[in-house]
Length: 264
Image (cartoon, rainbow, N blue to C red; front, side):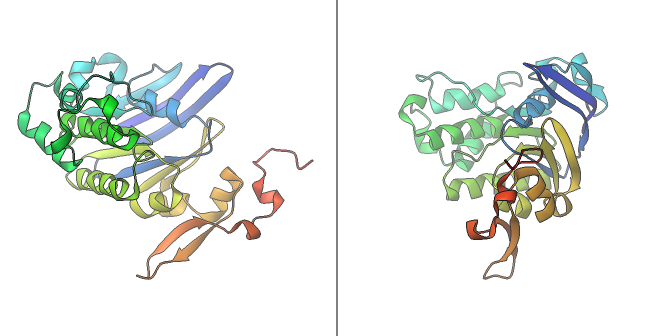
C-alpha cells in the first residue's frame, strides 16, 4: 500500500495539499484534473522524485524519506511526464536501465520489449523513433523494472500513443493490477479512465476535491465543476457506457467557465 498523509508541497507561489490518499494493491487509480492543478507534482512526490514540504508518504508502512532508490527500485516504479534519455541511446539500452538497481534479467527485458512491440527495434537509437515509439520504450523500461507486487506511478503514460497502443498499455496495466500490483496514473481521457479505473482522485487548484471509487468520483456533475465542461453518459453498440464531453451546442458559456472565474 502506498499512502500519503498531510502531504503538502510549496513552490513558485503554488501550494499542493494537504493531500490524504491511499493506493492499494489490486487497484488501479486515475488522477484527473485541469491543467496546472498539481497532478504532476503529486505524482512526483508519490514516486519519491520530489520531497514534500510537509506530511509523509509511506510504502508498506515505511516512510519513503527513510529509504534509498536501490531499496525501493522494484517496489515503486515511476514514469515521469517527460522522461529523459539520450538521443543516441538504443531501445534496449533504455529498457536495461530498469534493471540497473535490481540486477540484469534478460527474460524480463525481452518480455517488456515484446509487450510494447519493440523486439525488432531494440537496436534502434531513440532519436530515430517517433514520439509514440519512444514512449513505448519508456513504458517497456517500467515493465522490465516492475515486479508482480510493484506500485506503478505514471504521469500521462498513454498521451503520446496511438489508439491501438494506448489500449494495449491499459491492458498491460490491468494485467499488472490483477497480478497483485497497484498503479496510479494521471490521465486526461475521461472516457477511458471511467471505463478502466477502479478508483479516482479529482484534483483542482492543488486540492483533492474528491476521491474514491471511480464510478462515483467521475460523475458528470463533479467533472463539470472541475473542468467547466459538461459530461454525459454515452451508450455504445455493445451496451456499455462511456463518459464523454457533451456536444458544444449543449455547453453554455457558464459551463465553459472554471469555478471561481468571473462571468464578465
